[in-house]
Amino acid sequence: MKHEATKHDTSMRKPRLFTPGPTPVPEHVMLQMAQPIIHHRHPEFIAIMERINQNLQTLFCTVQPVLSLTSSGTGAAEAAMTSLFSPGDKGINVNNGKFAERWGEMMKTFGMESVEIAVEWGKAVSEDQLASTLKQHPDAKCVWLVHSETSTGTYTDIKRMAQVIRANSNALVCIDGITSVGAHECRMDEWGLDVLITGSQKGLMIPPGLAFVALSQRAWDKAATAKLPKFYFDLKKAKAAWEEHSTPWTPAVTLFVGLAPALQMIIDEGVENVWKRHETLSKGLRAGVQALNLSLFSESPSHAVTAINQPAMGKQFLTMLKKDYGITVTSGQDSIKDVIFRVSHLGYYDEGDMLTVLGAIEHALKRVEHSFKPGSGVAAAQRIFIENSGQS
Ligand SMILES: *Cc1c(COP(=O)(O)O)cnc(C)c1O
View 1 (tube, rainbow, N blue to C red):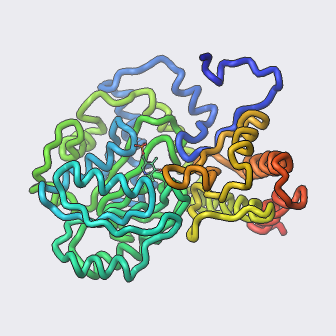
View 2: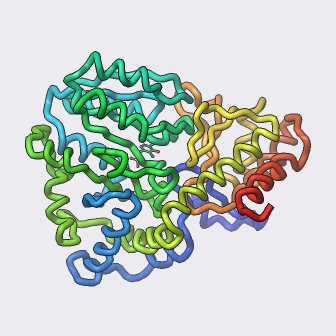
View 3: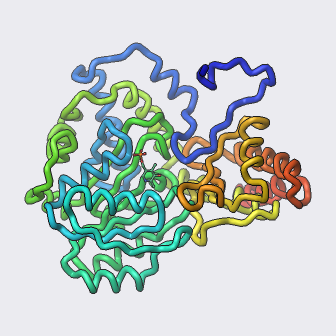
């Protein structure tokens, strides 16, 4: 089969990606990655890494090194886990979705004991649930939480949860920020997060292949005694190389060359403005779909991705979006595969993108005989955008 993007489409329809990773890559970033490859031990690359390292600290709101790994986001979690813990260590896994579940499985795979707090999908853990589990397990060495659970579009107030953890235990606060970094306010140092990870194909607007992780001082102290086996993902090696603006192994050079200008876009826009933009886009989209008589799946919606309950004839609807409107969204995963569809607004998106996806959703909904007032979705989103522009 020919690659989708190389197919000549006589309809002039533009392919539009609304998935929460991979996310769209800005044109000038793609062009940068098309330049002749450079060598990773030469000054040219080291200068690129120096700027990246600095900008990543700004993005993570930390003075700690933010280590870049050549792997997908999961590699950063594995690196943190094996670099910090020992066999038999107990960890608490707040499981409210497909990604959250992964960190419990990973602990078990490495011979740790995983205590699960099972939270209904679409909900965030409550302070009481977390505090009582911590009291029952005072020997827990870590708590894994997902800031923005991509499988259900659910946001967890990790600032508050980090306070609860610190008030009740010495457990390290380990945060999957894979779809929150660059979308939600996330202040590593100020909020007392001990582990914060993200991945390149999400808010960082470049293709898959890089992962990022930062550890607090408390976590680095713990790393000194960690006994889980690691080699490629040894964060102590990564930190030593970081001091020289380098990496222990051959990095994905091309992706770093793309990361530099992508990250610079975030810094130039201003990290707080980037958070604000995601908030506004997600509010507009949510208002739009609700005006179309669709309902939201999550009780606590993320600013990165919106999970929407599927209309009747959901399968035909999603096929139409892709085939007739060039819009790629994703369905749910596992038990909610045919229950929801997810529209992403993580990374390189603007208001026009939200109006476009809402327009296509309206058109397709009309064809599956869903009842709504035509134009109401786009109008509701536009109202939010105008209100938030300060020009109403
Ligand atoms: C995408 C994602 C991951 C997994 O990252 P990979 O890059 O696929 O390894 C983990 N957690 C969340 C919340 C994600 O969105």
